Image 1 (cartoon, one colour):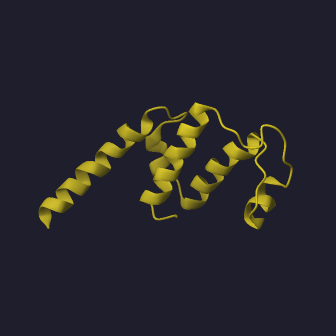
Image 2: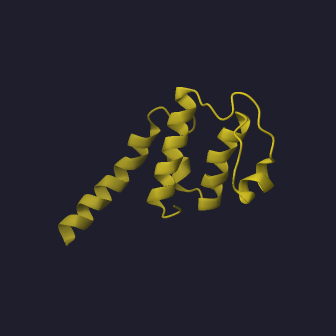
Length: 94
């Protein structure tokens, strides 16, 4: 069991390095973000691109307005969203 803990600790230590590739902000900063902050950060990216939110929570925060490009992200934005989603999973948010 100690071996698994050591491997897990090593993998966790490497996460900021792995997640930093292509991120718009330092990945280490995300590791300190709450689930609520990660959710907001991810959805703010979509909101800025006119995404049509379906959940009441997102509509309450970002509104109902949908506009072109209707949530279509650039490759850099998609990498950022993917990075945030990885942190959400890692922190047990999703």
